[in-house]
Length: 87
Image (cartoon, rainbow, N blue to C red; front, side):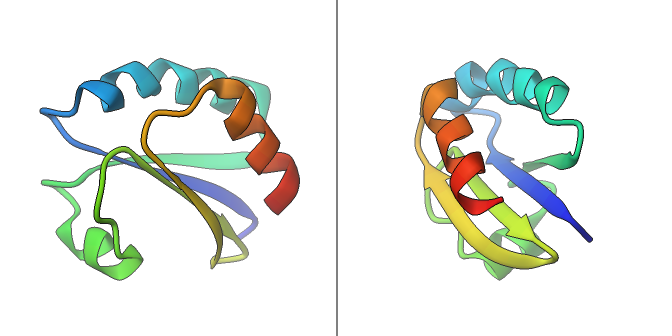
């Protein structure tokens, strides 16, 4: 399974739109991490499974296990720091 980040976002979420290109940059810089972007309207089962209550939310998974999360808009530097901590 390896390393994965799930980016939960919504159509009406301004911070999600700001975060999206940052996540795209991270995907290019960390090719060993699978990045999955999930629109909450299209993935209600995953929203429930991961207990997502605010947007945007990043869920960090290692071998399928939830090893961390970040909620709200965060700068790329803090996301990179979290990646270093959990992976």
